[in-house]
Image 1 (tube, rainbow, N blue to C red):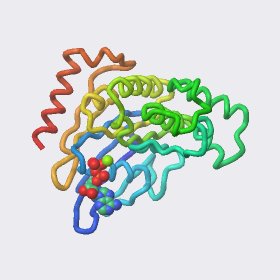
Image 2: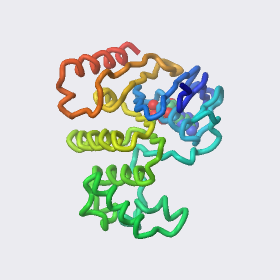
Image 3: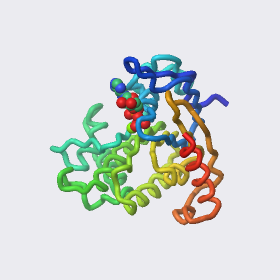
Length: 248
Ligand SMILES: Nc1ncnc2c1ncn2[C@@H]1O[C@H](COP(=O)(O)OP(=O)(O)O)[C@@H](O)[C@H]1O
Ligand SMILES: [Mg+2]
């Protein structure tokens, strides 16, 4: 079967800095793949190329058999920092992608409320971003990403700034949502436990310049419960990835 996303011999150079070299990576349709690596290894650079926001210096990026030249129409990108418009309520922020295309209907508003409820923001829909905590903003950003049910979801360390409890809640929500409508997901994180918990496959990038160093298949079927994190088999997988990262 053809992969949904394919990076073929991709390299990126900024000035004289070779950041990524000879990166080959495939993601199957509806797969959930995490990319881990130390800070500065080119994770954001890599996902931006998949998003069509950055062109590779060498090699090619393909999505669904088409070479990526611009942002894919069926893709949503969740940034490291939630990007919400300050002068719009959470609900109005969720409706923004629709408003850019047409006037929102009552059905759109109802759906926006549903996705807000999904991330436990049902009572907060009329709040402005400055009235929300960091966790609430991250959840709102996720709700906005999910509102259009994109087939491709690209997430760049979306939970990095959150406390452990909020992070766990959002991981579980993301798993449930992914179970629901099955998008293809690339998730970037430097949290190995998070990567293993969410993904079918974890890709370790690194070394200078960075390339794919190791791939780990995560052998736990879905749906996954948060108690999985305490299972010895799970801890063993986390340890293996951790050791892989340590050797770089
Ligand atoms: N637009 C750019 N111009 C120049 N250098 C960049 C640019 N974007 C990223 N870099 C450099 O590329 C390297 C990888 O960055 P990045 O992809 O953000 O890493 P990561 O997300 O893994 O922390 C860093 O050294 C960074 O400074
Ligand atoms: Mg980054």
